[in-house]
Image (cartoon, rainbow, N blue to C red; front, side, top):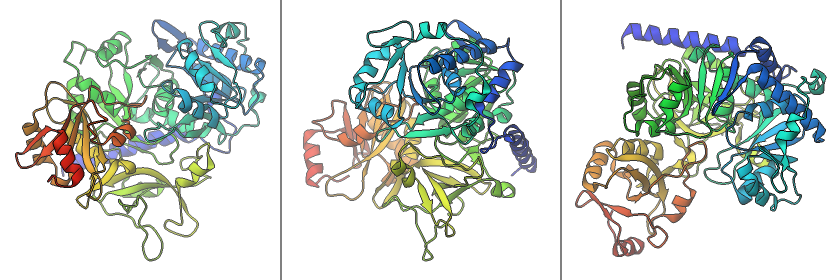
Amino acid sequence: MNPFSSIRREFVFIRTMLGTLKKISHIDPNSNFLITDEFEQIVDSHKKRTAFICQGRQWTYQQFDNYANRVASWALSAELVPGDTLALFCRNRLEYVAIWFGLSKVGIQAALVNDLLTGKGLAHCLSVADSKMILCDPDLVEIADNAIKHLPNKLPLWTFDGADNDAQDFDTAINNASDTRPDRNLRDGIKARDTLLKMFTSGTTGLPKSVKVSHVRAQRYAHSFSAAMRAKKTDRMMMVLPLYHATGGLCGVGTALMNGGALIIEKSFSARNFWEIAYRNKATLFTYVGEICRFLINTKPGKYDKKHKIRAMLGNGLRPEVWTEFKQRFGVKTIAEFYGATEGNVGLMNADGTVGAMGRIPWYVKKAFNLELVAHNFETGEVVRGKDGFCQRVKANVTGEAIGRIDSDDPRFLFEGYGNAKDTNKKILSDVFRKGDRYFRTGDLMKKDRNAYYYFVDRIGDTFRWMAQNVATGEVAAVLNNFAGVQLANVYGVKVPKHDGRAGMAALAIDGTLDGKALYKHLQESLPVYARPLFLRLVENTETTGTFKFKKTELVADGFALNKIKDPLFIIDNANQDYIPLTKNIEQAILAGSYRF
C-alpha cells in the first residue's frame, strides 16, 4: 500500500474522531441537560436563520420554537401529563420535529408511528407505546379510527387542517395556545437517560417493536455526524427519509439543526425529481439509505445530475456496486456511511470514504469501542461457545455476528431496550467473554479486513443454508443488481421438498425482458454454484418498508407455488445454462423430488 495513502487514512480518521468526541463530550446520561435544552440554545443563537423549508413554506428558528411552545401549551391544556405519550401518525411535514420538541418541553413523549401502517399493525404500535391520544394527517384519520377499534379503549383523535368526524381540530387549538416558552422547571425531574421518544423497528419480518429513545441517545445521533460532514450554519440538508425513523429524524435533523443549518423536508421521495428539487432549494447535504441511491442511479441521466450543490451525504446501506457509480455520476464528494440501529448500542462511521465499508476501528482506539464479532452457528442462529462456555472472536475476513458490550454508565454503550421486556431480553447475551458481562445482539453479520475496516454481510435472518453452505442474501443481491436491466433484487431462501436447507430465490424488478442465458453466465462468473438463485420471480416493484428495507415475509411464504403467484416464475436450467419458465410439470417434478437442479 502507498505509505502516503496510509498516512492520509490515519489523519482523516483521527481528525474525524477528535471532532466527533468534541461534539459529544457534554453528553451525560445522569445530567438534566436534555436535547430539549440544546434545541432551545440553538434557537436563541440563530433566531432569524431559516430552519425548515417544506413545499413553499419556511420557518425561522424563532418560528420553530414558537410553534413548539404552542404545542407544549396545548398538551397541558389537553390534560396530558409528564410521562404520557402522544402518537404522531403523519407524513413528513413542516411541523413534525416541532411537535415532538414541543411535547418534550413539558416532559411528554411522542411515539413516532410509521404512516404506512394500518389495522392491527397500527393498533399494535399504539398499544405498546401506551399512547394516550393520536395526532394524524387528515387523510389518515379513517385509518387511525379503524385501528382504534382494535384497542380496548377509544383514544382521543386530533388532526391537522380542521376537524374531521371524530377527530378534533389541532390547528385551531394550536393557534389559540400561548407561544411563550414553558418554564424549565416543568421538566426538572427528567434526566438525559430518560425517554424522549418512542420509535419502532421496521417490521420487515413481523410486528414492529417499540424502541425507547432517550435524550442522551438522541443527542448522540444529532451530534455524531457534524465532523465527518463538516456541517456548518450555511448548510441545507435534503430530507426525503421519513422523520419517524432515526436515520432521518435524528441523525439528519440533528446534523442540520445543531449547527444552525436548514432542513429541506420533502413529503415523499421522487427519484425522477430529486436532483432538480435539491438544486432549486440550494441543498448542500443529503440523508440517504442505500436503496434510495440505487433508485437514483436507475433513473435516466438529467441536466441536474451535477448541477446541484450537494457536497456530502450521510446514511447507511450503500452497497459497493452502487457507491462508485453514484459518486462518479452525481459528483458528491463525501459519503459518510455509518452503521447503527435505532435501539442498538453499536456505532461505526466511515470517515475516509473507503468503498463499501461501514467504518473502521484501528488497534489504537479499540478500547474506545464496544463492538466484537463472534462465531455464529448459521444453522441454529445462535453464537458459538467454546468448551469454557465463552464466545469466540472471529479472525480477519471471517464473517461473525456483531455484538456490542452494554455499559449503563457510558452513554455510548447503553441499551435502553424495547417496550416489551421479553423482546429486550432476547437481544441480550450474558457471560460472553467473562462471567457477568452483557452484550447487545445486533442481529447483523459482519466481517473486518486486515486494515480494521468493517463490512456488512447480512441480517442473520437473511442468511440461509443450501448445499451445506451459508448464503448471504445481500451478496447475491449485489451480483444480481450488477446485471444489465435489473433495477432491484430482493433475495431470500425458500423450502424445497426432499432437500435440506433453503434454496435461493430472487424477486427481480427488471427493465425489459429477461435474458436467462446471459443472466446465468453472469451469475456463473460471479457466484459459487450454491449461491446462485434456483428460482426467479419477476415483479413490477420490490416491496419495501417506509425506510426502504425489503419486505420478505410474504415472498418467503409464497415460495415458488404457481397457484399462489401471478408474477412470471423462472427456474435454473443447469443443463442448458439458462433460466427457463417454471411450468406445472416442472413444479410437480420438484415436489416429487425428481427434478435435478
